[in-house]
Length: 125
Image 1 (cartoon, rainbow, N blue to C red):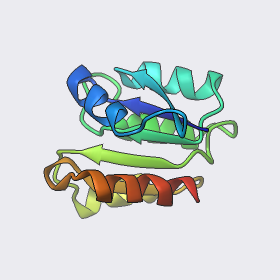
Image 2 (image 1 turned 90 degrees about the vertical axis):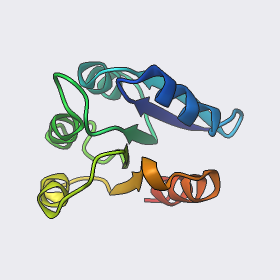
Image 3 (image 1 turned 120 degrees about the vertical axis):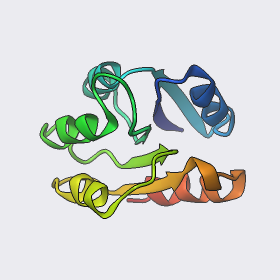
Image 4 (image 1 turned 60 degrees about the horizontal axis):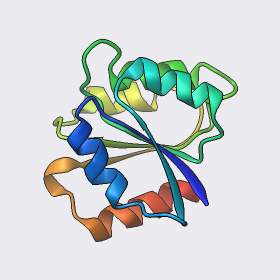
């Protein structure tokens, strides 16, 4: 069973994503803020984090920076699931940290098959 943390300030988005990751293959945990995501990542043994970038307060970028700066969480793979138009600057900010892989899935191009494929790929990192 893979432990996955889904992070988004929109509870509906969290539940849509969680519904695509059924047990027993996946144990899904939920966080609705950047602070909660950082706290849970430090307390739980996670195999993958599914992370929105645009959240109030602590953004997804801040979460990546905090997790990559902590030896205990630096290697957790992160799959960014966002509606944001990801720019070259954004990509540089996300990849400017040592640690686990970061993949990006656009909410606008979201479909179950490609999403599950991305999750499986990220879990193999």
